[in-house]
Structure formats: C-alpha cells, structure tokens
Length: 221
Picture 1 (tube, rainbow, N blue to C red):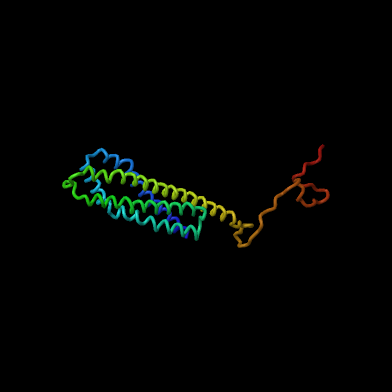
Picture 2: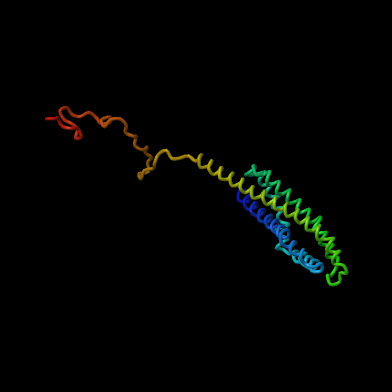
C-alpha cells in the first residue's frame, strides 16, 4: 500500500506539473509572441498549434492525471498519511476545474477558429482573430493558475507524506527490543560483568593471617 501511494503521488505530480508548465508557457511566451504577428499569421499559427497538440504526449498526462489523483485520494483515506488528505482533495478539485475550463471554454474557441477555414481564404482575418484571441488568452491564464495551484498542493502533499513516513520509521526503531545479554561462542547466554564500585578491597576476600596481599604496601622501616 505504501509503495503504491508513493508511485501514485509521483505520477500525479508529474502529470499535473507538465500541464501547469504547458499552459503557463502559452501565457507568458506563446501568446505574447503571436500577439506581435499579423492577423493572418496569428490565425494560421493557432490553427496549426491546435492540430499539433492533439497527440499522445499531451493527451496521456492531461487525461491520466484525474484518475491518478482520485486513486491518491482513496489510498490516503484508507491507508497512511491522512494528514495530507485535504491537500490531495484540493489538488483534485483544482485540476477538475482546470479541466472544465479547457473542455468547456478553450476547446470550443479552438473549434470556432478551425471552422473559419484556411487562412488564405478568410476574407476578414482580423475579425476572426478578435473573436478568438482575447477570450482564449484570458481562459488560458485561468487554467494555468489552476494547474499550478494543483501542482503546489501535490508538492506539499509529498512533504507531508515524507514527514509522516519518517516519523513512522523513527517510532518503529524506538519500539524495537534490544538484546539484554550477549550470546557467547559456547552457545550460552551470559550476563555482562557487574561494574566494580567502592575501594580496591571491596571485592577481595580475606587474606591469611601473617600474609599481605601482593598489592599491599610493606611496613615502613
């Protein structure tokens, strides 16, 4: 269960991060760059982009992120790391909102632009551009922010899960019993030596009368 949670979280974060980076790049580079183009060039470029982006490299992470996030929520609810559950739910909700913006607003604008026909045969490319550019750019910024917020929630989720698993490992190490005696080569178990305390004579037996211990000083002369 723990390994499945880790894999699901990593894949969810990767898919969400890819979408956040893609739409953010359109917001701060692609659209400002196309804004400097002529009307006919703008229409032609956006039509070509909308056709080229419909490929597995885009569609797989874009579509797979939703079931991955749903699975991550279920695993967190049933297993480890419930402290991160609110952040996972927030990431799922934010991604769903961004998905709705794309499918309900951006895609219809793309279809509208495609229906305008070939740029070489459009009589008024400025009107086609005016009906598309400002609205598409605005909603693209919205979905870029939503995807970025979802990605941020997932990054924080990974931090919370990491702290939770580290604490679990520390608790398990604390509860592990330690050996009380060492096993000897003869196969027996013998306690260690008791510490010697007190004076040097505390554990020395009585000596014979008239004899002195080897370590005792001799009589003074």
